[in-house]
Amino acid sequence: MTSVNTFLWFDSEAEQAAEFYVALLPDARIVEVTRNPDGSAFLVALELAGHAISLLNGGPGHRLTDAASLQVIVEGQAEVDRLWAALTADGGEPGPCGWLTDRYGLSWQIVPSELPKLMSGERAAAVGAALRTMSKIDLRALRDAHDHG
Image (cartoon, rainbow, N blue to C red):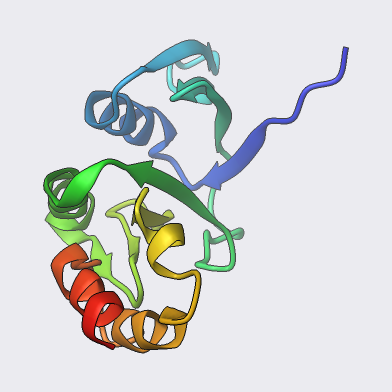
């Protein structure tokens, strides 16, 4: 059997990050924690909406970057707002076009499910132009660009 798993390197906060992510997202759970002899977490396996992820406490030297991110597709502005606020809190940072970096350095994209529909067709350029001005995605502004762009 072949499976694909996202594997992320953390300095030392893999277990805390996993607990945060699991509490934040629906249909999420910690599957297993492999511990070092001193009791600290070495490897944390979790699932986020059925997606397998492993978080390694590997020490310094391999920083997370925005070159790779977890994309979360959500229904509606309220869920965009909720996840955005939680993931940028306590040291997280907003980025462009729906990207952000959380307090642990992991990059995320919080994307409303409506975005692909808005980005297709004759008005895609207007929607794309509006999207490029945003940090957190504003569905109302994207709909306006689509309808009047």
